[in-house]
Length: 129
Image (cartoon, rainbow, N blue to C red; front, side):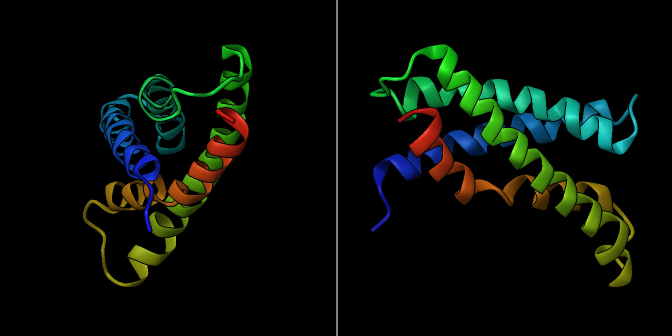
C-alpha cells in the first residue's frame, strides 16, 4: 500500500520538479545545458526543502540545519543522477532513435523524474528522521 506521506512527497516533488524544469528552460536562454541544469536544481532544491519540511515531514525531530545538510547531500546525489540520465538521453539515446527536436527538454524531464524513489527514502531516513 502506498503511504499518504509518499503521495504527499510525490506531490511536493512534482511541484518542485516543475519549478526546476521551468527554470532550466529559462536558464538555458543564457547558460549552456549542464550549467542551466545545475542552476535550475538550486531553484528546485530550495522549493522542495521548504515544502517537504512544512507539508510532508512535519514531525521530524532533527534540527533545521541538520535537515538542510542531509537534504542537500541527498539532492546532490539526485543531481548526479539527473545530469547522467539527461546527458545520456539527450546526447545518445534520443538522437539514436531519431528524436532531435526538443531532445534536451525531453531528456531533462526524464532526468528530473529519475531520483524520486531513492530521494524519498533518503529524506525519510536521513534528512527528516
